[in-house]
Image 1 (spheres, one colour):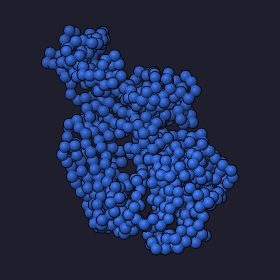
Image 2 (cartoon, helix red, strand yellow; image 1 turned 135 degrees about the horizontal axis):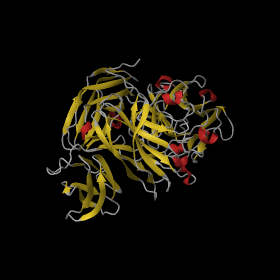
Image 3 (cartoon, one colour; image 1 turned 45 degrees about the vertical axis):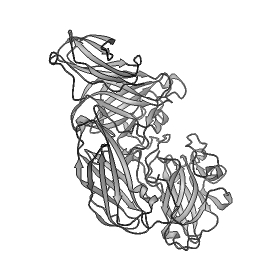
Image 4 (cartoon, one colour; image 1 turned 120 degrees about the horizontal axis):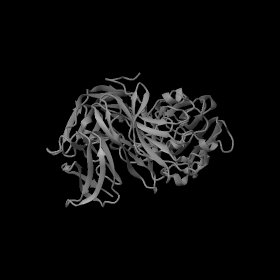
Amino acid sequence: MKNITMIFLPLFLCCSLSAQTGNNEALSVNEKTHPNLNFKKSSTLPESRKGLPTSVSALAIIWSDDFSNPSNWTINTPVGTGVGKDWVIGTGGPAGAFAIPTILSTTAANGFALFDSDFNCSYDQIADITTSLPINCSAYPFVRLNFEQQYLRYRDSTFVFVSNDGFAWTKYPVNVAVTGDYGYSVNPENIKVDISATAGGQATVWVRFQFYSPNSLGFGSGCNYAWMVDDVSITELPLNELVIDRAYNDFAYEDGGYYTQTPITQIVPLTFRAAISNEGALAQTSVMLNVKISDGTSILYNQNSAVLPTVAYQAEDTLSIATTFTPPATIKNYSTTFHVSQTEIELAVDTINNRVIKDFTITDTVYARDNGIATGTVTPNSYPGGAVDDARIGLKYEFPVSATATSISAYLDVSSGSGTYAQAKLYEIVSGVYTEIAVSPIYTVGLSVSEWINFPIALTSLTAGKTYLAAIVISGVATGPDLFVVLGADRVTQQPKDICQIYLPGLGYWNSHSVLPMIRLNILYPFAGVSEKTTDDVILFQNIPNPAKASSVINFQLKKNAAVVLNIMDVRGEILVRKDLGMQDSGNHSVSVNTLGLQAGVYFYSIMVDNKTTPSMKMVIIE
């Protein structure tokens, strides 16, 4: 039984972890409730606690195999056996309709083991590949199986079986923490399995890899993605190896995920936790979590958790820090370093996974959950029932302080089809009901290029304590075969499972989704440049985004009905863009500005209301 300190961390995460029991793959809550929602065709790369380089230079290598000699392995398929339904040893990668990338293992050129479930698609699969000869581990009481893999899960489980007599087999589940449509965060991914209980000190050891997806798993089983394995070894287990499995920056609410960018008005106290495990052969003592926060110049926060006297062999635990950190009300970048330590000394190579770094930024206007790096793509059109107009994908945002939304930004991938359409919508979520409260103009996808697109919406009030969904609606599917709007996806940043949402018109409701789309929500900056003469007439706000690339949105607020003119000037004060907006009613207004005609550089803009001009605001244009 796990020894829990403070609070145990549930591992149900968007772009990360879930749970599995026995031979049955755990489905998400939404998939259990709505089995007709087929989440097969995603291409997700989550952060993985096992995706660290494996070095065994300081440990005894008992046995290794690189699949260069197929006779070293015996292929046996208890269910679905036959040509094209077994493990294959060779250099060819997956060939199914939804083939994942071929493994880039250390010795891939010599061959690797592949079970191509998607290509086989027999709907009833249990496939084994086993070492042909026994391995002698008699000199080592604690041993570890290491291998490189490339894997993506759908409705399947993956296991290692170990035997010390060739008859009785002990099952070791692998990829347990991988949810459907997840798998590879790096290629290859290095997996380590402690098999001491079966193989330690034994003179005859056999190893088996099993892909498990029989009909008994229900809908979608037996037609999954693929599992590739290479460069297998058995080494002695290090005596001391403490690992941070997960690190949490909790923003305002527990398990709410952390924001990579937070507007200055939404700053809240942050709390810190980490899930740890002992993957060494000995108990670890005086275990403690330290968290430091730096702004690049100095350490602003340096706190320790309570000390765990002992973390036993193979035990897991949770460490929390009681002291919170509230970022200063300054626009700045921060880096959070989580580090777990103990009395025992680890091998240098094993200290890599004692440390996790998570960055975040306090911004003027931008709310974001992604890290800004597209490591994949996501589109509703990839899902059965999603290749139709009005399919949607979105992200939830919570507001501890009331604010005003101005626009939604999304990263459109180069694979988006020219002539398709995208539109942003903002929803308020109350008791599971999604109510549309704002909508942007429709954006027509032009030449294929990966870039951020800003979707302006009318200024919309957001209430403190409520949850909102920033979503992209996709249309124009009928413009041509396989022409879709595709968003960039962040496959690394971990978020709770309910943060990512998808809407398929055939279902008619929003569902939890397993991929983190790069969608951001922008709000008004709290400070405005306003002259004394015009304070009673107009408030002018900072443009969004700033810097701007192709377009930007300028928001202003009128105290009364007035004739409005927008001017954009260069550094010399020469007016380059003049937009006569005519008579406008009192209230909040937004105007979208096409900046493609302006060279990269610094510009200024102002609003003229009834011949009175506001002080100018600075706008930066980038290429």
